[in-house]
Amino acid sequence: MDTLTSWVRIGVLLGVATVSLAQAATPAAQLAGYVAQAGAPAQPARGQQFFTSRHGQEWSCASCHASMPGTEGKHASTGKAIAPLAPAFNPQRFTDEAKTEKWFKRNCNDVLGRACTAGEKADVLAWLLTLKP
Ligand code: HEC
Image 1: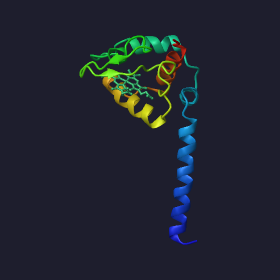
Image 2 (image 1 turned 30 degrees about the vertical axis):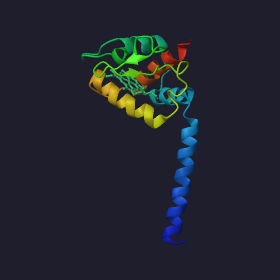
Image 3 (image 1 turned 180 degrees about the horizontal axis):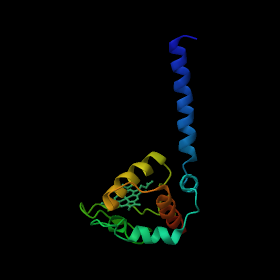
Image 4 (image 1 turned 180 degrees about the vertical axis):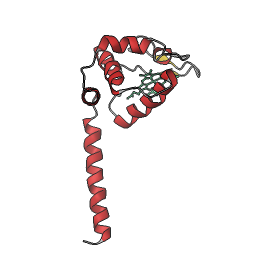
């Protein structure tokens, strides 16, 4: 097999892997992933507490996403509207792992001054999944 053929094969394999990952990214699958990483069950009540509290910085998650994330949020500094975070109110939420991870990283850093742990993400997502119209 020449080099070009191997690269084509690797490209095809990566493409297949990416497509299957994207398909697997339902809110429930992402929650299962965080629970597995944390090695402990998620606790929705703890997620709500985490989401609505400040953690030594200026903002809580609720500062931008509203304390009932079934409603639209409003960015704490730009004032821009943010679509509801709870999947039952916004079917696009938690369907793209890369997007979810990107924003967890950025927002946790703003609110906690560090990354969220897998357990914290699991708790928040488990709580968001309890919110129904
Ligand atoms: C300063 C404002 C702000 C704060 C504070 C904030 N967020 Fe966000 N968040 C955003 C914006 C802006 C987006 C991206 C726009 C969008 O997806 O509607 C976003 C998107 C997200 C997403 C992406 C969800 C998806 O898959 O579509 C998650 C998860 C999230 N935020 C969680 C949190 C958590 C958890 C906290 C608290 C630790 C938090 N955010 C605090 C502004 C904020």
